[in-house]
Length: 287
Length: 246
Image 1 (spheres, rainbow over the protein chains, first blue to last red):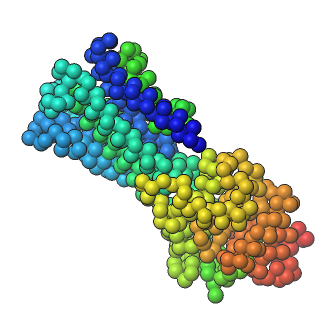
Image 2: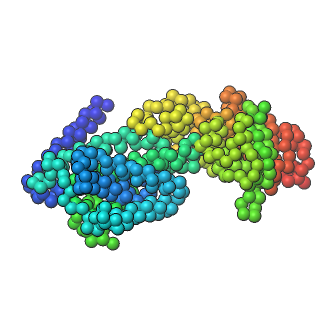
Image 3: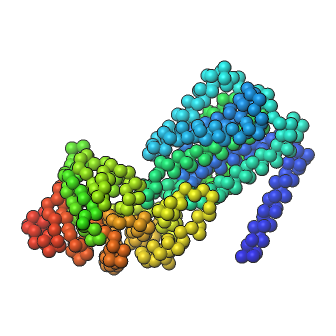
């Protein structure tokens, strides 16, 4: 037992050294672009992990998670460009707004039985939000997008991405820990029963719709957090974040055999692969 | 005193009447059974009682309260558990987790978000596993169990909801003669030790007549006879339509 703990400690130590040293090495030996890419992977990993809560654990095939990512991103961006809201508050407003969107979408979607119908309804809601943002030019700037989003100097990426790397990493690790606690909790066990057999779940006294809705809202809020991280990284935003492609990327990250065996680590790994392929083979995602 | 009272329960699927106005009264702490040939409406009747189907007419009273139209989870919370003809468990969870999830939900801990699930409800879950003789297989995935073990696990899940009445839909279906005998003993023991009322359907007549205190016979969605095992044995109509002695 002692050896096992020691082994875990050693793995943790090596991981910590790599994660701490990585930005300095990448920025110095490679280029800033690769560090930018690394941060993007971290953001996508958080999005994929949040998505994994509903698909990997809850068995809900949502095709509308871009709505949460996008609503979080737009909430944060609009607060920063249109109001004098402090950046910290704008950042925290993102998961809250995404949770509200999740509550609305989830309220109708979780009642639907059947993977296809659930996926279709969530996709429809997300596309509706995409159209709304696209068309409501006076408020959202439409397809012009939002440029020059002010970011606190401490997190500015004008000179270096290192500070923002550590910020994004810290936020993602905290979210990872919270999600890890949730999936190991009684609620996580209930979600797994839902994935396995919702019929039996209701016959052990579970209000299936309520549990699904709670999982949906939690997942939405973490997706919104990923959206806020994305805004601070890019300092610009377009309605594309609300389009179905991010949902597809998240589902691709979460629905691999590896992800199902070790869900959050798996989702992170596939976020890495997805981001790399998205950056180096963009044509593959254009279809 | 009746724990379950059914009055004029009806259900049709298109033009087919599956249950056509059934009256049934189940006495508290007894073992009641419903028998009938395939397609008689037994499973549909269970589905209507447990809230799986909405009925077209009639009422269901459980412990004196009208539960007609309530969702299955609310009926379970009122103290009625059920098993299915085709075993209904959580196949990729371990045997222990199958029971533990039920125990935690029954204890109202299902929404606990940050406590570690593993140690919670362990003692209670192990008690139920001991009751259905599956403690030795606690860490096995439920999906790899034999048909008989899966039926016993489902029974354990039902018991873990701490019911006052359990509906068992063909509890020995797919079991070997030895497993059937042990399940009969188990049902009898549960009824005697915990005073849980049992209502079950079954095709194995030996089992039905050996454990039931009251038998209801259905055919084409209607009750054709109801009474003690001896009365049912003597009933000519039952012999004609079901026991094959026409």
